[in-house]
Amino acid sequence: MSPDPTPEVRFPRPLRPGDTIGVTAPSSGVQTPLAARLDVACDHLRQRGYEVRRGAVLETPDGGVAAPAAQRAAELTAMLCDPDVRAVVPPWGGELAIQVLDHLDWDALAAAEPTWLVGWSDLTTLMVPLLTRLGWASLHGGNLMDTPYRQPDGLAHWVDVLETDPGDPVVQSSPGRHRTGGFDDWEATPAITEQRLEATGAWEVVGGGGLDLTGRLVGGCIEVLGPLVGTPCADVAGWGRSQVDEGLVVYVEAAEHAAFDVCRALHGMRMAGWFDEAEAVLVGRTSAPDSPGLTQRQAVVDALGPLEVPLVLGVDVGHVPPNLPLVNGASCRVVVDHRRSEITQTWG
Image (cartoon, rainbow, N blue to C red; front, side, top):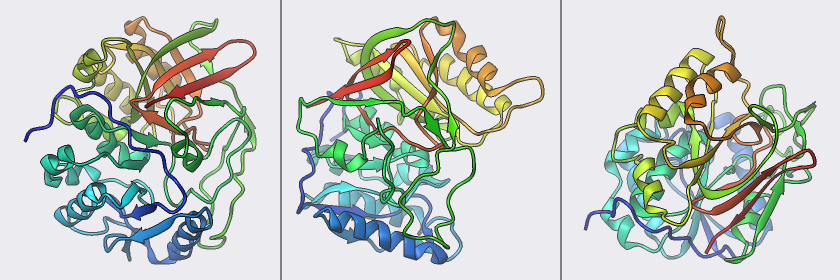
């Protein structure tokens, strides 16, 4: 059975205490010095009432991939197809999730009841194809190693989002605070739960003014999604055309590529039709460097300005904490005005 190229969105059922959450590493594994943080994160889920099933593909001594691509794909497929596993939460992203795509059993996944896949960064390499090829909703904005952190006021924890009943709205607003420094030292402080958010900043509608619009959510990390342009794994334009009742709200964010690279990638995504069905594009705040004569902001405006749809910059999505959980495939309403920067999601 071949996956439907334009499937309807299927939302896994909500998480409930007592459910099993699977942990595997389809991209980078956890280095030995960070094993204590992995244990803390698993214990956090257990304290919330969940069973945690740790896979064989998880840890690595050097921080590279956790196993050969076929083995990573087999364990991920098995967990996603197991009816006893209600969510799969990798420890984090990495660099080479793209190796897994050719080895996934797409027919088995198409026949299975959908399971939540939770992640961001390199995990969007898997989450976008699950949506566009199979119609599976997933959650962007959480991972296992970040799970012990408390969210700031305005943002929901990813577990709370996935515990939400179908039809109930999830309303989140920008906390107005974000991090400027690097990542925490989990080797020295594996049990840390507080996020350092020392800077202030707001969402910005390019050109000024505000907006109030709706659409279906899809998106992720520019560096890992750019290489999927033109492949069967990322036909966002085709999937968007299938959403006959509403357009798309596409979100993108840069991890570390300089402005020249981001500009090239976004131009390519635009020319490939990624944004053809977009009602707006949300651009995550980034700490990636500017290039000589071109800032990150200018790169986005240069590449996406021709779309003539609202561009919202500085959104709390991506590699600059905090991270706003978004459900790929959910309907959303985005409101930005002088009082609020807010997104409401509903599904099911």
